[in-house]
Length: 102
Image 1: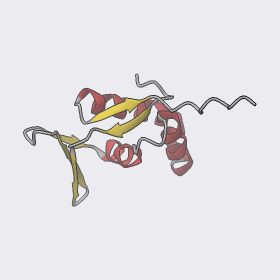
Image 2: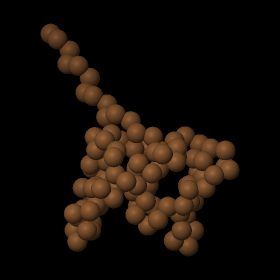
Image 3: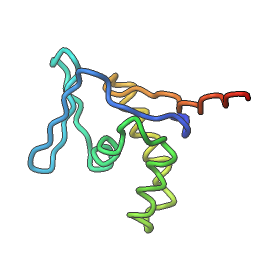
């Protein structure tokens, strides 16, 4: 399960294509295609390296309150699958810079 405090971001060099409701991510070599279901497609589009897994799940829970109970695990599973497929990475949130002492 993806650490909820990490920030998912697409790997450099992957290509995302969406056509007629279908979404596909191609790995760097272009030899492997990963098909994204509707949930994974929405998650992919929210993975910009700025939001944590928790923040993505919260955003989707607001949009789809009827599915809120399952959203956190669905987001985590989708991110895990994309990390395993090597089309996404997880980065730790940047910590605040230390305060300057006077």
